[in-house]
Length: 466
Image (cartoon, rainbow, N blue to C red; front, side, top):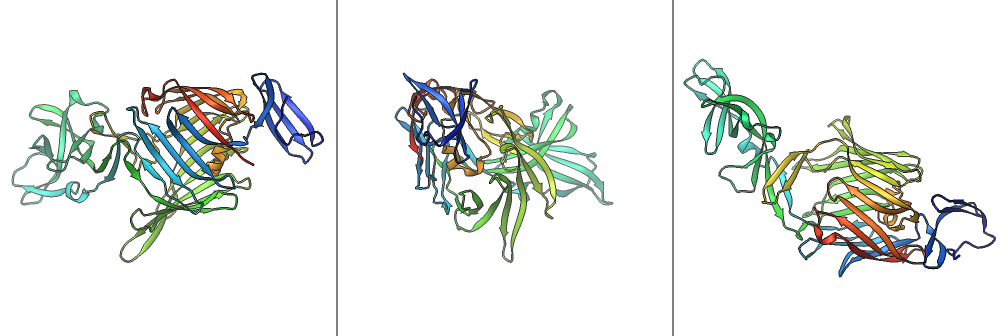
């Protein structure tokens, strides 16, 4: 039986074997304890590296594509991350490159599939500021006039003593009752007479009769300007982030710099407990006009733990006075009895911007849907309890702030409710630390790369940390 370096006669005072999991806990003379897993590779039986991992991933290769490449500095900190992915059409998409000098990070994020950049109510004054109009005759409490393929809707009749005054709503559309369903309000239309990248969302507003057909009139709810439709591989973001790092390499402050001016236009501040676990993230926006600069704390993330395991992340939105306006759960973790996360619950597309989800369908149309603010199970994870977590310390050194999520064993199956359906993994070609040089993956990822990632092998290289 070969053992890791450091386990020598005289410095081990006790050990305990869990026959069910294959985990051996070794207690050293200095009082520290480490957990190891017994592995068999060919005819050799040995203790792997600790469950926390002594190795970190340096690269993951799929065929000829180096999907992930990580560079570390002399303190085992990640200083460069590169992520490439196949797009399903035989092309390689460089999704992200990040230089991390622990003073600033400058990531470049590229589109994997068609993506949107949009702004809300860009032309609000022109289209949504309803005006009063006057008629000499009474048209009833409300009525509508054709406006090309749409309607101008008049409502709230008021007799002024000389004429009938109505509120005018332009660019409405009418749906007969037989065609109304729960998805009707999700429809959108191009703004008449404008570039096709302008779209309107509508709200169900008024039941009425038009030419003997009874139905509902829908009025504009807000205007969305689609500033850019990105094709796969196009750069979406090269925003710069300035980081303030604590002595234990955890982020204390993130300052977001405007992509053109380089000025700070927002920042977040992190708070940790006595065990260096992240407990709060305060988020600030900075607004500047001709006379003043204003900083607003618009919300915060709160982390809850069971022991040292992160179990819940909540978001508190704050009003202008800094009081809590609303609190809701955004992520929840469920663990097994050894501390591996087995379920992840989340609010889908949290952070989309304005409470709506924007996407492009196969025909290139813009789809706008309300974002449900409720937790849904998005991932399930199953493990092989005889094998350690083969990511080693990679995650810890990439994102020290996530140390409350501790994966101890090797995942063998992942299931997801949206992005992918399933991923099965088998491990081969173990090194002396118990880490695999090859992982066989059977996966179905329709949203990412289609059949390109079904039944393939990933080759993994590692760096051994001191």
